[in-house]
Image (cartoon, rainbow over all chains, first blue to last red; front, top):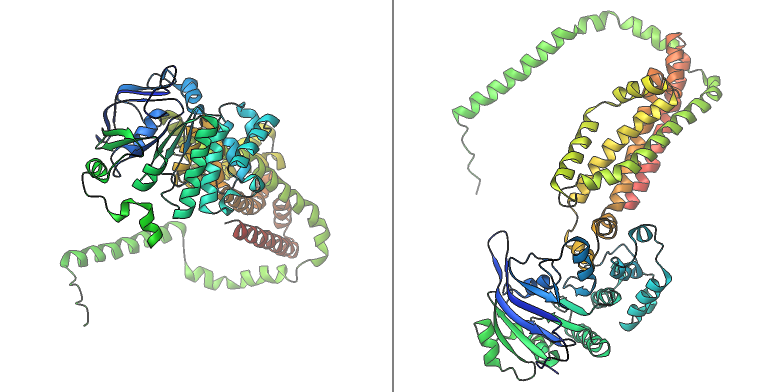
Length: 268
Length: 261
């Protein structure tokens, strides 16, 4: 487990990956990294350190301007059109602000995870194949929301909406899940529930999982391996449990404060 | 403490004086051009009185002959609204900056949309009449184009103000352009779209009455016939009838729109 690579090629490979935005901002600056299949990785760093960019380089939501990223041996940078959509379909993504269509039902939101696998005309007419609907309901069941399938997504609480987001990603049957600050908008108790959902899915289904986190205590608790970013550069790489406060301070370039831990939020 | 009144500069005074002069000049020029004369209106007031006298009381017993033409007017409006709204939706998407698939596609559809809007509905009525002859069909085609122009413009503006972050969720799942539009753009604007369609219907009921005057059928055509044969009491009846129906439709439609947004 952990840093040790399992049989076969790594699930994700960063090779001198560089992302420079059109406005000149350097999002990622020459990152080299192998991520083993089935690992649960937490990425930490200050906001603006490149965490979101790193996840978005994996599914091609940002343009890679130097080097490359490979997902299961497929180059992200070379992927275009249908190839890129197929690659994205194998990578589920979860967002801080959930990104659900509030006016659509929970089930329809989760079925969006099948867009790349079902003919467009069937989707536009609402004629989803039964196996895809079953898959969506099964994903909802995994996050404990099977009974809310026909409710409008906007009527759910924040924690429930985030779990719908997880179900949507699961419905893609992905080999990788990316979670971009999945608990930053949630209260401490709900945060833990969402982290436990992600951990259980990682363990039960063996899906390689990358999670951007703000809270250092959550990172230590759930990560098999922690990656630290500062100014787009990889500045830390080590097993989750053993990270010291001093190492966190090195990643952040400043002392660790109450803002950086979830428990401090509980105390409030 | 009273605020200090800002001082008016000479430059501002000169500019205001010029603006007043310009408005006065423009008004005089226009009045002269159209033969505007309060005197003429005053000395011929009697003629207006005679017309009003002939117009009252309204020919109440004329109303049964108005039901069918009025239904035809509504039918013209319904057809124009329906087909126009169907065409307007894809046009609105393709002409929305940030959602349109490419710069050339955006440019093409935005300009097509603006061109449609610049042409008055009477122009379209005449154009279609030359193809299919004067009548309700030409009228409904003219209103179709008019509806496309109104609904696509308003919807396009709504689409440009949506939350674009939601589209990222569909793209991240591997969605193509049409799937992204269908699942993340349209759900954000559909109440506005339906509201614009109802609004277009209100406009179309009024416009189809006017189109009847130039031969597009419906109540407008009856109005024209009665007017040219000097049956002013019947004209009054028609105007009252149209007024009541248009008012009722506007109230219903406005109530429906309030519930939507």
